[in-house]
Length: 219
Ligand code: GLV
Ligand code: MN
Image 1 (cartoon, protein in one colour):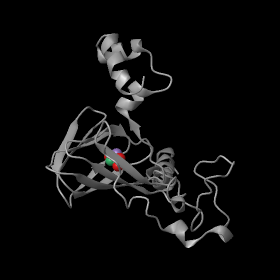
Image 2 (cartoon, protein in one colour):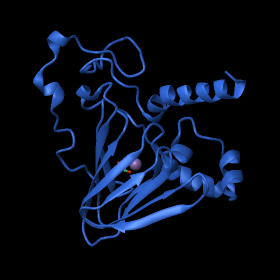
Image 3 (cartoon, helix red, strand yellow):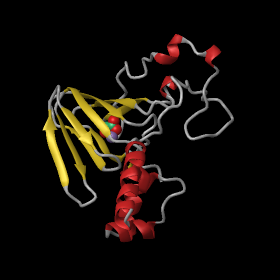
Image 4 (spheres, helix red, strand yellow):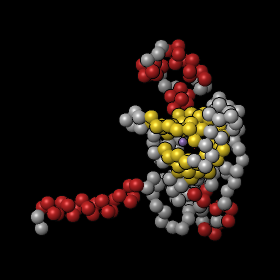
């Protein structure tokens, strides 16, 4: 067989074998379920499974997001997760949900999920949803009840309540633990703090302004 045909065959088989796994945010499970043993001293990618003999029906049912979160905070919003940490039955299954309550005028501030794409559903209220691509393009829209939005994995996004009352969204992720990096909290509230010199140069303002912002985030 000519070298070119061999190369083509090789690249086709690589595509067939590697695309399905590389598209999944979390690895595929190798068993029906693996209810997380959150207290195991063993550290693995995810959590070890509880023994099947100790699995109970309640491992597969949850009220983690049944109650509205407290939005009485600096952002006027609250994110309540149903992820592997609050719903152990999700372990190894590659998905999770959030409940996002946003008070009148509140914001779920700019953040990213390093391990998942987000699919959102607006249950109540009116929200401006936006994200920015790696090319710096901002996509946004005001959504009402019944509408969906998608935030591609790892992109910076937010939701601002622009309605007259409270807003409620349910969001779903293709990861049991998508992770959340809130830009303001990460940059200005880390422990220990990021040096002023880094932030003042980054944001092109003087240290006083950096210190003022840091003070709002506990630094
Ligand atoms: C919304 O952006 C969420 O992370 O649930
Ligand atoms: Mn999000």
